[in-house]
Length: 125
Image (cartoon, rainbow, N blue to C red; front, side):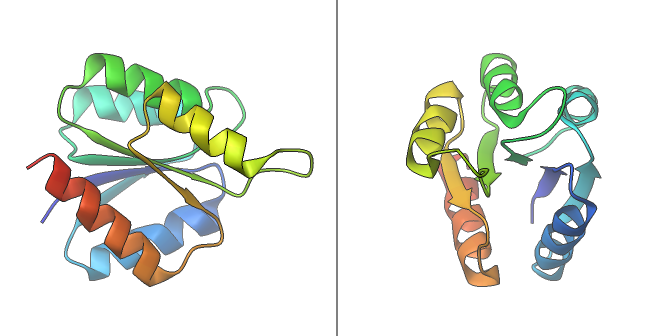
């Protein structure tokens, strides 16, 4: 199975995603912000990084861009619930333009998460 990094400023989301992926046999590390997540990504070997798009400090768009520019062969999944004045369709397209392979909108189901993770891991095998 894969080594996956989950970056999200919401502890509940990090923990739920970690539980889902661990139940699927993956090894999962977590980070509460983009800065810490990028530090982990530069010091460990991950097949997939799942990052929230909207976070304080270094957001998921910055994370996706940096990972795309510095890590050949790592899949990036952006997750977002948007915000009160954010067009989710445009945000999703921006995330893909900035380096995310896929975007998953919150709330998502366990099945959607697992299918998307499997799809992305298969892209980079």
